Structures are given as structure tokens and as C-alpha cells.
Amino acid sequence: MKILLAEYAVGVGMNGTFILEGKAMLQTIADSFTRLGHDVVYLSAGITLENSTSVESNRDNFETVLKNEANNCDAGLVIAPDELLYDFSTIMENNTINLGCTPISVALCADKVKCTRVLNSAGIPAPEIVDKDHAKGGCYVVKPRYGCASEDTRICTHFTKRDGFIATSYIEGEHLSVSLICGEKPLPLTVNKQIIDIHPEDDYSEIGYNGNLTPYKTLRQKELYDTAISAACALSCRGYIGVDIVLADLPYVVDVNPRPTTSLFSISKVMKQEIADLLLKNRFGGLPESVEISGECMFTKEDLK
Image (cartoon, rainbow, N blue to C red; front, side, top):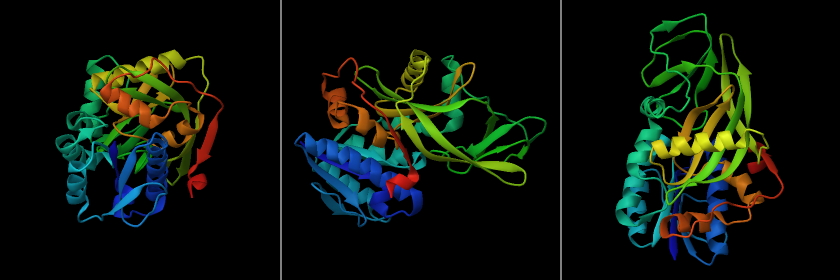
């Protein structure tokens, strides 16, 4: 098969950690497809991958190139910031077999207010959204309503409402994620321990994601898997999904990522099955009941350079 991979940071030439994480995800997925004998085409603003074919793209023509290439491929997968992913997923859905989430599911996951409401309706624990102009005496997490990873996320003891941001109650616990495949049936892959950097400022602390340990061994694995599967099903997710969880008295779902996440870099080092094979079987049939994990892998963003 001819497979199209469109990773936004690589496709438009972003800088900083975005390009490091984007290239790591793209390389991991492209290598998996090529090991299975598929032809891989990917959008790029200059980065070159071995054993795959690049198609030149940039910020101005990304959508146009995506549509043109999707029409010429048998299947495809797009990875992009949550606030942009709906439009790109729609293009992929309309022009080839989309191996990722449907646009409707992407839109629900990307909007943290709507996502929380869906989770609450399904009885899935999630941090409470604080809907007040000012709040004092507590601890809160302030983050973009639309955004990915820990971008622009802060912990503070009081806040002022700002357009485009939401505040939630702060929950003390372990920062974990669950990676899974959804569609034909839910298939949990791993629990991952997130490496979170907290940078104190005068009246708040900035939160930053800096890698993870895969797999993370815990006696509460089944509880974590059940929660992640329930969240993904409530949001009608499809394909590879990353569910961010703070594990306290209960597993609290703080984000549902409707796309491949950086954890895939470490998962590919310890999982016997090919991620490409799982993505294809999820759409065409034959998804296994479980995956085989051997060993462990830990990385930081510095390791991705």
C-alpha cells in the first residue's frame, strides 16, 4: 500500500521542541510502515527520512499538498496540534482511508470544555472546570481551551479568566498516560510515566512535558486501562489515542489526544507488534487481543535531538 504521513511540525518547518517531537513520531511511524513493505510518502519542509519519499510543503500550502497527496494514496495519517487537527482530519477522511480519528471525535477532544462535559456525562473522573472570574484559596491548573500537551499550562493559587483559557481544579497525583488503539475494538498498549518539569515563578508554576518511561508498572494498570478505554469510547475515538491521567484516589482524565503522541517513540522500542500493522488492522480487520511488551524505555526531549 501507499501510505501518506502528514506531521504538521515537519510539514511546515516548526522550531524548538515541536520539531523534535514531530520528527520522532514521524520517523517511528514511517519506519514501521516501511518494515512491513509499504511505500511511505510524507510532507516535509526540509527534513529527510530514510526509505520514505518526501513531498515539499510549507505553512502556506500544507492543506493543498495534503489533499493532493491523499488522493494518490491508499491510506493516511495526520498528526497536528489539536486546534488544527479537525480541518486536516477532514481532508484525510474525505480523500483516502483515514487511519486516525474522525473529524467529529477530533473536535470533541480538542475542546477541553466539551471534552470534560462528555467525560462527566459518562461518569468518568475529570478535574472540575472552575467557572468564576476570580478564585482564591485553592490550587488551579490554567491552560488553553484548545491546545496540545502541556503548552502554556500553569499551576496557580488564583486566576483571572482569560479568553481562550480554562481553569480546572488541581489534583495531586502521578502524571501518567495510557496509549491505546480504538476502532474495531479497544486495544490498550502501555501505561506511561510522564516526566513533568515544574518551573516556579513569582505567583505560579509552569508545567512542561519532558518525556516518559514506558511501560510504567503499577498495580492499578487495569483501572487505568478501563478508564482510558471508557474515555476514548465516550468520545468515539479511532486509531492511536493517548489519554493523559493524573492518578490519585481515582484516575482523573486530564486530556484525550486524538492522534499519535510522543509516547509512541518509547512504545516502539518495547512493543513486539508494529504500530503500522495495528493501525491497518484497526481499519481493515484482524486486530489482536493484546500486545507483547518486553523491557522498558525512558527518554527526555534532550534524547530526541
